[in-house]
Length: 65
Image (cartoon, rainbow, N blue to C red; front, side, top):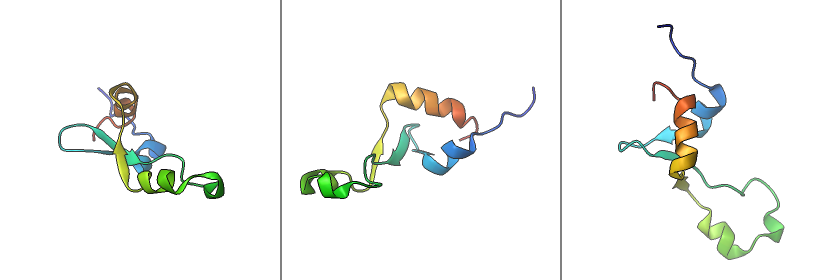
């Protein structure tokens, strides 16, 4: 079998945890902060774990992670 290529965009955006979950940055914090509530901005700090359905797609992009 030939080697599989990793999607370059995916390797920059996602990491896999030790248990195999996909970790990513919180969405919605790039621009437009003036219209967001302070509560939203606070809750969107740090990282989050993707849902199982989305994680299945991302894991195909990271074959050796």
